[in-house]
Image (cartoon, rainbow over all chains, first blue to last red; front, side):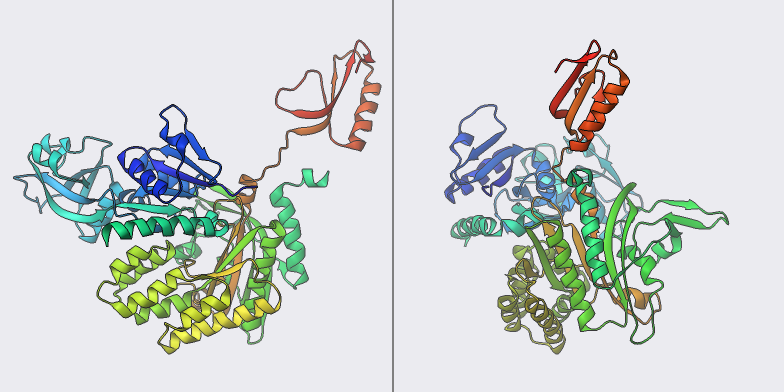
Length: 213
Length: 357
């Protein structure tokens, strides 16, 4: 039986960039480059199978062993704390997790701070570190609207260039943590496919170092 | 036939019981519930803090047991030279689920032999369940000594433990920025993995304090014992294995079976637990998560050997004889219609009082 390696890629630009890196490392998959409605793409010669999943689901696929490897943002790892190996920082898809609010925002220190976010766990742990009493408003999108409409005082969200914030008269007040894409592995698969996984990791690391160091 | 009737986890339990008895372990049958207080005081020792509670006859709070170890250690022997060796196969309750768990505990006046015996039994347990398995061994005393020697704050130590657990070298590098000796040690700890001798040598070259060296010495001795018994083929030293420092003080280990996406065996030396309970004993043991075997077994219980279909017109005596005859050869199902959710190897049909096929 061939030891296939299953890789979960996040749909979107980050996943495409990650696939480009994997392709450069010798793990190309011509089927994946053909547009179509297929969900799983494989290159039997290389023993590799790719599939696209929602970015926030990558960690679940890997933790539960449906994928041996995955490419995922650090934000997702911090939020869901999956039990996986975090093998490499790909140093792409860089952005930061930050607290933002309206330009004229002043922290109502005497009151509970209302925070809108897609990342309740990161938010909770950040503010509990500051012993600040907060009320988390869990939203699934358009987080920037919340302070504008008075739903919350601030938001905790990913900030890439800051354009959306600027266009809506919002600004970053505090930076929580820098974010970038990571290569993660299922811990149990790693025990049996370590040679293959380490080769992929080393080749990707080589590319990261050539690019950034 | 027997293979088909016993589920994968039941077959495993059978083999494990026989193995543990051969080494002098006795079965331990416990009650289904315990006083809740026992778990509250040792919450961090438990895998999950979701405990199902209810009130007992006297109004005291009871819990459906989420764990077996605490109940065993509570009564651990304290007499010098006495060791209690037990094994169990019990249902435990976590996160509102009933989970079948087997395992063994060795508590009391432990020495080097007992510790190596338990690790060896962990290796053998895995090999009984599947040919392709892996056991990773680490040492909490070593991890703790290395972290102490690196000059990290308590918060940084916790982060370093998280990075070690995730084989996260970039995270460790970030944490040790400007602290080169710490980075050197932690990088080696996180990166070296594999066969005992190679790893021990690599670790030895970076360790500086006596505490670190003592812990490594224990690990080296354990490796020698396992190697002499021929048990090291599927065993690796890997310091990403770690458990709560508040309880675990020595060797810790996790076992994996190929095809099952999470660890099926977890254990270690947890001397600090009996100490917290005010008992002068040491303890080591492991648990096997049988539910993982059951979730990932391939067997198809829907398969039968012979299907007998009749329209009700045949003499029941003939039908009973046909069924008994088929049951001697294998499994049989008698039905008045063709079942949609079963598969069968052969089918016998009775219509209008006689067998037609």
